[in-house]
Amino acid sequence: MKTTLLSTGLFLAALALAPLAAQDADDEDVFGQEEQVTQTTEQTQNAAPRDELLTSAVPWINGTFTGRVGLDWNWSDVWGSGFDFLNPTSHGLSQSTTGVKLGFVARPKNDISITGQVRANYPFVREITTGTPATTYTVADFTVWSLYSKFTWNDALFFTFGKQPIKWGTGYFFSPADDVFARSEVDISNPTAEREGPLALKVQYPIPRSMNNLYAFAVLPASNDLAALAAMEAGDIAVAAKAEFLFGNTELALAGYYQRDQRPQVILTGTTGTGDFNFFAEGTAAFPSSQSEAYIERGAVAWDSTDSDYTVADRSAETLFSATAGALYTNADWNFTAVGQYLYNGRGYASLTLRDILQATFDRAVSQPAGEPEISLTSIAGTIGGLGKLGQHYGVVYLGWTSLWGSTWDFSVLAIANFSDGSGYVKPTLSFSCFNYVTLSGGASFSWGGEGTEFADPAGLVSAFSRLNPAYQALPTMSLSLMASIGTTSF
Image 1: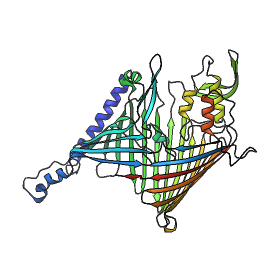
Image 2 (image 1 turned 180 degrees about the vertical axis):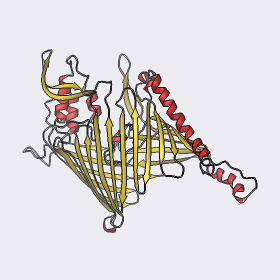
Image 3 (image 1 turned 45 degrees about the horizontal axis):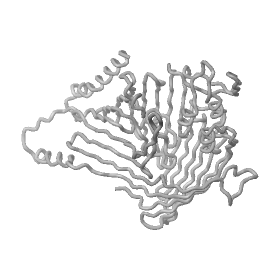
Image 4 (image 1 turned 45 degrees about the vertical axis):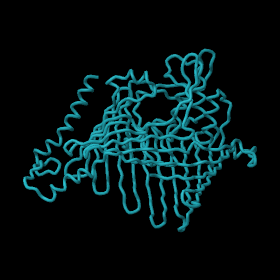
């Protein structure tokens, strides 16, 4: 641990001294040149007013209110003989997407700013159970999404500290590089939305007379368990570095990440464009770790009168690779956008289905063979909620038109496939702006795939296993939805 901390300290010190070295090499450098004005000029007379414009005694408030309510209907086994359109498997009223994002930006001085954002969704409360005997309490439910400050040293080093989003990747629907830091999943309905980040220190050094940048990061460990957070040590801090270079309209970046309880990673990203097209790609290599990593494999095993068709192996000694590439096309004249992206997920399963993984975990709910890495329904349910966490090969296509033929109608189609288990879904959506601040939209979702595959009926399957009912059959589903957006606006 001492060696790691020493190396980190030397790296940050070298980064801090870099602008001083640049100043010695070239006294005319704009990043290092000292102010030597001896005569009052119009520029120096206006310096104080400019500084005042960059400061504010009152924070700037900003935010977004989303008013949304909807109806949805769901049918199971839509391709089977029991499908009845007039009798949906389930239906309901959706209100939880009504919420608020409330943020602020404060700039008490011209060289420092503080930014924060709080998010909450209806009903704005949640229940927690704690104590012995167990007691349930209702508490306010909101998330401190971000809270960080930005400041500079000598206009050469730029610091950001606090709970902040850290975006490394160039991907759209998939981003292995962003997964390194992000504490929230990709929002499929809004894939470019900012993902929740960790508590971290970021140091940026713009290389003089170029568009290139060097970054250093120190990422503090995160936990929702206060006792676990209090037990963290200095050795639990993750360190990372990134260098990005611009060549014309092409940007390349190389990054590395280390934390003693996780896999060390190397990340390479790139983006380029021509005309209406933008191309992007990412690749990661996750090296072996000392921490055991459970991986389910086919193979019968019996213990304590329990039989299972699966074994759990330790995959921590393997080097795992992930990569994604895609293209984005935009046509402003047609108000048209198209996105296509492919993902190879080296941490995923090439042949096992979602049902296989849940069944193997269910077999170990009561006891587990000696020597196997620990695996549980809770840990599995927590890792399959996001896209790209199960199979090895994925593809996605998105087509979107806004203001169709100059009207107030919008149309989009999203199609996603897990090529590893042969499942996927397609979701067309049509929306109409009735008048200012009121929009109606209707959508449908059709899934395909064999019984128990990822996109056949993931919500129903996970719910069934959490109720210890592995006999549930997850077959392709169909969903219809009608949504009203009322009063949604930003300020």
